[in-house]
Image (cartoon, rainbow, N blue to C red; front, top):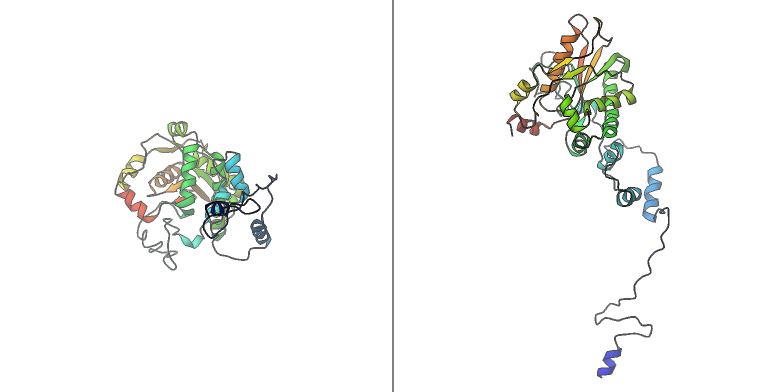
Amino acid sequence: MCSLAFFVGADRKGTRVDSGSHERGPLAKPERFVWPPALRSWDRGKASDAAKPDTSTDVPSEREEGWWERIERTYLGVTSMPWRRRAEIAGFAADATEAWCFRCGRTVGAYEVVASGEDAGCTGCRGTRVPWKRVVRLGVYEGVLRSTVLEIKNSAFARLANDAGSDLGRQVVRCLELEELSPQDALVVPVPTSMWRRLARGIDHPLAIARGMERAAGLPMVACLGRQHRPMQTGSTVETRRRNVARSMRVTLAWNGQPPAARVVVLVDDVMTTGATMREAARAIRAAWGVGHMPEIWVAVLGVTPEKAEKDAGKGI
């Protein structure tokens, strides 16, 4: 009986049989390596669906990483994706113009903003004075937009800033059309970075964003502002931020008594939190232009800090 039990462990084909109820066969032969990689059946289904025209108007959903992106990341050492691809994967789309308050840039709900009069703006900025007429934003400073801005600053990724600036430029053009204006009626002025901070980071990121706006949307751009080096604003209260940037900017380009012809000056930066930096830039522009032929001042940023984060920043944490 013992010898019989010993041979029960194998069948005629040499396949090992466990003592349990299931059978474990020999190791499967590895698939043949094919280059370039062919679309599998589930990839073909996705490709056919992608070829169909998209008739939906909803915000794009988060997309799964494709086979080519996996190859790039694994074998080609890709460390950073272009702006369009990372926005597509994250399901990010530029905000609709009615999604934020035109005076402060904060996220608002339906019928929350008053368009004109003494009560113009939202509940957060109503009754306050701002030195600009309109704020234009690409989105809220969170998620993929926040990680993109931080990567632009920390890795001096100028191409990433250009591409994000292209979308911001198109957003500005949409708002200009609402005012029955053309891109040629506007002049893009990047908020300057101090020389020392530019040397430390290796990039003037507002300038890189503005160049993307100029290239993609046809918005004329001039880097006419200079800035004194001041301490970082991170973690400062609202009043400290204002004192820190006060009188730190000036127009460095000589107008020869005749500033550029423009109906709108668009001040460009990456993020707006309390608006202290933009207020100082607007002051410098007004001082250089004079009183008689002063154009409207707009503010354009990639992201506006969420309201809760702004309150936390105001507490100085």
